[in-house]
Structure formats: structure tokens, C-alpha cells
Length: 228
Image (tube, rainbow, N blue to C red; front, side):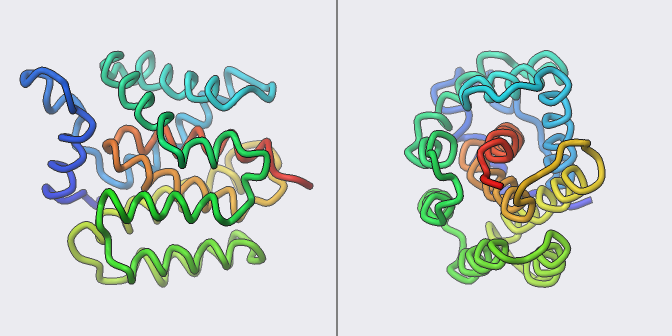
């Protein structure tokens, strides 16, 4: 099982716990990238079990919060603070509230925010951009092969390694959810699965647990907004 580095955990815990009392630090547990992907699927399943109607993006976020607070017993105040931070970013508005989530500029804004806040290498960011370009035409299976060969199996170091693991594990779990697990039918599944993974690494700006919230919420929202 892949583990995120102490460097990344220290950084994201400090960001996520900003303005929290000192004795509250560490309430977000050490999550492996595999666990983030697994809980992404659990959060999506929780959302679909509770709701069948198309609802506003902010309401979708409430379902994801509820999953972590009610089902996983995470601290309510910390979860609400983190999602508030996510929802205050300009990238959130682009991806969640735009009438055209398929506009490539939206996901590029997500990657730009990751670059600015977490400072991964240009090589990783360019590889992620290639994946999204591929996703516009490729099948989920073709995108999966690209992710495995060009992201998951590459020898990344430092922050690149952590982000690559989270991106690939959420992608692979999302792939399984949307192609095998759920009865929901997607309209353009490849990009939606990629957007899940993009939401996951953007959520990492605020902490591992918020990677789960943002990736699952983005998956639920974008899957309803894509055109036939």
C-alpha cells in the first residue's frame, strides 16, 4: 500500500488545520493514496444511495461532508472549515458552477492551483495535462493504460510522487466505480473519471481528507452536467 510522504503530510496538515488550536493538530489521520481512492468510491456510493435527483453543487458537498462526519466520524468543525476553504477558491466556481464543465480551461485552472500551492515539477503537470487532452477522445480503457504507464509506474520523487499516487489511485478507483460498480450510466465517462482524479489532487491542497470530498463531489456534479 502506498503511503504519502511525511513532507506532504506535514504540509497539508498545516494548511488544513490553519487557525486550529495546537491540541487539535493531527486530527486528520495519515491516509494512503489507496485509502483516498477507496473512500472516494464509498462517498460516491453514499451520495447515490441518499439522492437520485440533480441538485446544486453546494448541496452535493453537504452529502460528502455528511459521509465523513456521520459515517467516518471525522471532526465536524474541521470538515466544515476545510470544505468552506475549497468552495471559496476560484477553481471551485469554475468546475462546480460553470455551465460548461467540459471547458478545458477549467481543469487547467485546477492544475495551475496545484502547481502554485504544492509546487510539483513541470514534468508531472505536463503529463497530467496530456492525460486530460487524451481523455477528450479516448475510451476509459485507453486512459487507464496511459495513467498506469505514464503516471503510476513512473519513478517520481518528493511531492510529485505523492500527487502522482493520489491521482492514479483515485483514477483507478473511479474507473472501477463508473465502469463496473454503479448502475449509473455516464455520458462521457473518460473525462469524468479524469476530473475525479484532478479534484483529488486539488483537494490535497487542503489535506488528504479533503481530497476525498472534492473528488467525489466533482464526480457527482460533473456526471450530471455532461452533454449527451
